[in-house]
Image (spheres, rainbow, N blue to C red):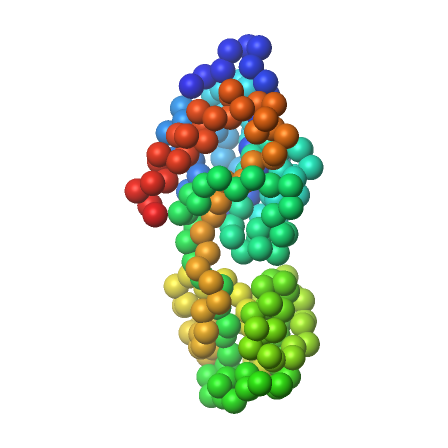
Length: 222
């Protein structure tokens, strides 16, 4: 549904890559087409065919923050990111069932994980998902030293920086290529639609049809 000229401006926060690509069909179901490819453009604000809807390109971990503080009215963020953020100030109406993967623990081949996670043990854990790791191992009664990394997580156990890693796993090919094995799944991950709570009240008439279109388009994926 294309807005009229007096419709309120809506801003959607997306991250580049898989989430952006898999959100496009959902937007099209709502009659919205993004006019530029963020992989080919340096622009961070992208127009759509609807003059009252724009897309901002932000880092995946920043999507909840932009939506929470109202810089974006709604956005798409992975469950992993939302768990770390805490979801404060966000309405999370729809699991879009896109960008699916899992959060897992992985170790070097030959590492005795079962013995390493016995009650009262201590582990060095490399991850950027510190809250997820903290809660997971606390539930096991395992003490951990957290080492926060932002990339190349697989390297940490190979060079002795950590005993284990907590990271997203899709195919597992990167783990295999680096002689690591997945030893425990923490949670399944998919991406959710998140909405600023004030925008949901003040711009409900404009937002609701888009939310309903997203809901319908994602039903078959769940």
